[in-house]
Image 1 (spheres, rainbow, N blue to C red):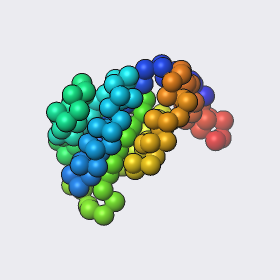
Image 2 (cartoon, rainbow, N blue to C red):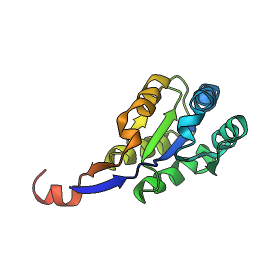
Image 3 (cartoon, rainbow, N blue to C red):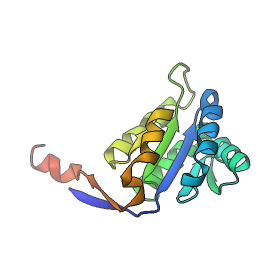
Image 4 (spheres, rainbow, N blue to C red):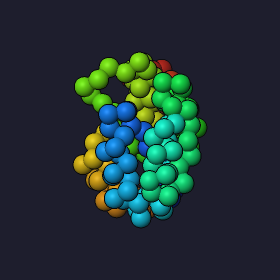
Length: 149
């Protein structure tokens, strides 16, 4: 088991499918003050829309279908994202569903908390863990397999 430390100032990825962008933007606007204490990034259009609406700096990557989900996944692997708010659309098939599944797999593999709804995101921001350092436990799957895990 290895440990990855989250600093007090978290690195939060903000992602939303088209049908949920408005909901994520409204949530970010409502929580602008709390979010301003952290580093923010997001996929393409979502990042630029949140930044335009809230005035918060949000580092933008490509849009999800053009590789943005994979870029955020790489950030998770490199410990450059340690929380993710991902309002995905459970009722619409996405052209990049395999990328979404890979992103969520990496989040679990690297013990990155993921909020997929407004209530979950509210619980994130209201948690005392948001105000302090926190150590994630990342299973070393290579070693675990050698031990018969």
